[in-house]
Image 1: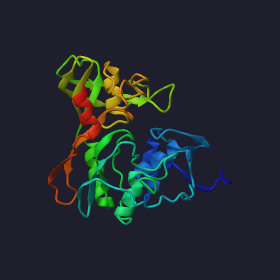
Image 2 (image 1 turned 120 degrees about the horizontal axis):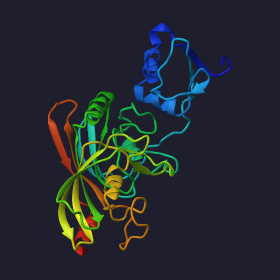
Image 3 (image 1 turned 180 degrees about the horizontal axis):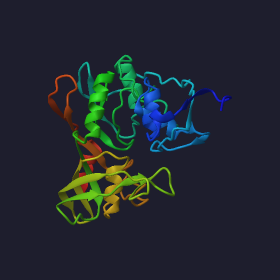
Image 4 (image 1 turned 90 degrees about the vertical axis):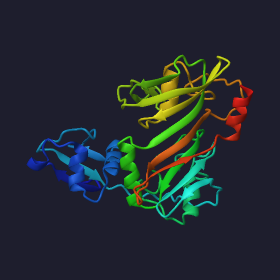
Length: 306
């Protein structure tokens, strides 16, 4: 192990019985828990020469090696892109994200994202907790989902909103058009969501690695028994949560070719899902604020057609 770049740590008696991520947090005080967990997931942490999970319980004789991960050479550039700003102050910026716009850079999308636009608009004043790829980003919505999201301009605000997300105290409502008639006027889907065992790009319910996920829904309009217009309230915020949950009860979101029918009878670009409302305690004023993004034109026209 001495030939590997980085540092090694003996767990010892003080570290025995600790979760691996907790032990690393104790020996790497300058690193956040999310950073440490990402390094574990990426295989940059070895226990006795082997990779391990964040939940691994250390023993006193364990030697934990931490690779030195070089700073990324990728530069995310500010871009003068239009932003539909709903609200902005010195701590946060709330925007209405359009369809086809990715929230943060990722393989295949290193430009034209919300982050590129925010870097230009905010002149670099964004929280750095999530690193160079996701400055300011506390939460995200899918590329083809429209609606309201919030970004943070400093780390204090970011930590405040991240804590509210973790406690499930943030208000998040979505509007969607789904296939088929929804039987109950109101209902709740409680089904753990995790990575699909066969397709790593998809999520699935009750997966072995699933995490608790709760979606409440309410019927707004029955569209000729073929489709239903619904409102969803998120209690948790898992990847693709509404799309996966509604598909699991036989009502996939219209236009969603991943979890629904491959062919759509309408000329749509992805799922008809809109983040309508976002409410939270402001990090500085400590007052509850709620923001709303109007339905996009394509969504309103589709409702008229149906």
